[in-house]
Length: 89
Image 1: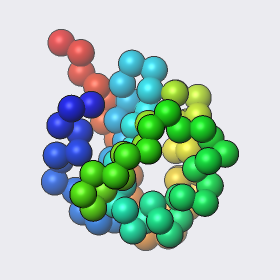
Image 2: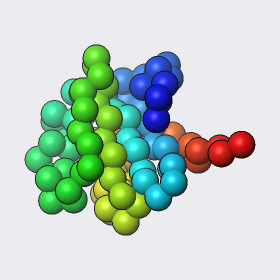
Image 3: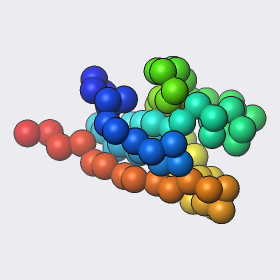
């Protein structure tokens, strides 16, 4: 996950990384505060960490897929998702 927060991202972009049984979400702090903060506790994230103007949220795969589905149902809130799979070389 090191360097994950260094991708140049737009404010309305949520980056999703699939990595070894985990889903990691990188989103703008404003979106997190307005839309995500009130629902995220029900899914028991492993990590919620602010990094500058971004927030990193890490889940086990199952809970991460539930959160991803919630995001997809709420795309009308003005954001989009970019997904990456970890490449283990």
